[in-house]
Length: 391
Image 1 (spheres, rainbow, N blue to C red):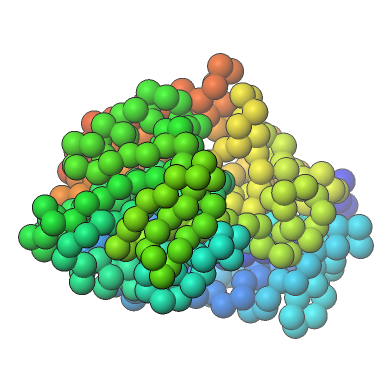
Image 2: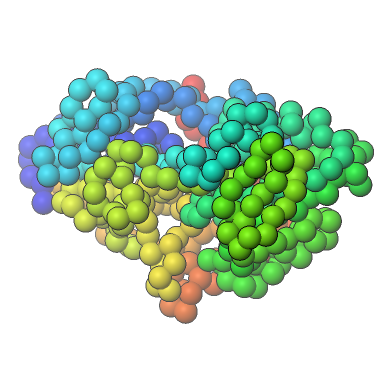
């Protein structure tokens, strides 16, 4: 417990959805004498929920960039986070060490295509594309704008990954673009995942509903298909069960991994930082983790999905917990596990999933029928977020 009568330093690592929200909430809760340092390697990010629209061609890079304006009372430092020494309570960065009284780890997740043999080469040569980054989403749009025939394979190359619905939204929006170009009948689209159904954490009913959406749009679904290798020369997927599938263009969700600084804390065997379900406190004093960097287990033992909608709410809860840890008045931290997400299906129409992920018997999630209204709701969220942070 901190001493509320002396200055404290809180370091927030990462200026994504969670980091920005945590830093600004902390500034509201803490007295002026307490320092809040927000560290990011560039302060030039992207609106993650818009990347699928970049893939589809509905947004360009400048429309979805997040370049935070100066935040009053927050020391914004551009630096690479190299490690977090939880015993000495020091963050080591490329520009020097930063001692802390409390640290919030919100560094997101990285991509690791090298974990699948052949995948890095497939991406480098244009045989494959991915939309989990701005450059990749732009490039994939160009690739989808050139293909006129053949087969597109949409592949989940490893779990966990950010935004459980995204691979299937990618398939639906790719098909939508092909339809707009007048070549949809000449291009087959199939989705492959190691899970038995899409979004398994949401339960089989939601998974079956998503499979139904794919099938209604002429997209094949293939579950329980764990990729072992990509052969870019032959344009072929090889699976762990010995089966193989040909493709002309591979749209891939690369394996995800915890950033080096996150894994280096040693707090989690898999690299992600385990946290308390309700407070997001980690297993070291004065440390919290949220969003994609964290590993939060649900009552049924499955991990909470890595999604921005959760990171934003987690950040508010973490800020409350940090303030109380430092001896200040703040609400009792309590993350409730409620969340929702949109599922883009094309034609400026989206479905919406809403649910209680902390329900005792497992997540209780309902997938609401597709509507132009849900697509408009997502647009409003995009506009509000960009307006809040960009100068």
